[in-house]
Length: 251
Image (tube, rainbow, N blue to C red):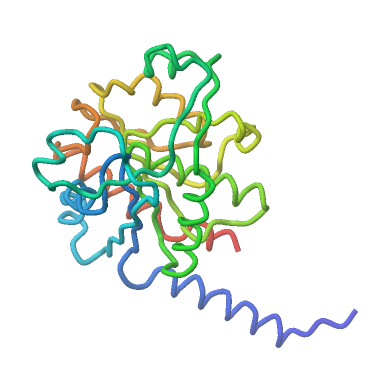
């Protein structure tokens, strides 16, 4: 068999150009807000990260398409006005008579997400049109579509175009219709940030098993972004270390 070494050289040069270009310029970080907030809230919440990264990163924000009709936290309304506010999906479970958080901790209770497919399509379309991004960053409910889209890429035997998931106060995907997506851990690098006083802290620990070897960071606060400068610095350090298009490195 004849080998076209010139063609091999051209392919390798092209590959190196892609790898090189993927590491030039500021990091691009796409942020997904929690349920019952919006991108203005998320911009405020990520303020410390933006300040730490400075001109090393460009932050983009995507809002959920599901209007939030449940009560909004009074602090959010006081700081950001009447909205509108959004979520990524609605939730139903097989034990509606029970306390929601109690039902969540009972793994025998089945949960279902309303309109989550719409959220995934919205996210994937945004990533394709506005990317490429280096990092997908989520808070609370916003972590769910990030994890689900990552798993969908694997199911389709495709590599994500981004290289890192950073999830604050995240929880595992609970919709029973999607159990098949999570038979084995996801290989994409992930940073999981937990608040020890978060009422979902115990349940959120299950997210550690969804990713193969996540970086775990914890702070002494609740369901919020950390204010501790040392934790914020640790998050930034891991973003810079892990985010440079891990998918590209596997070409």
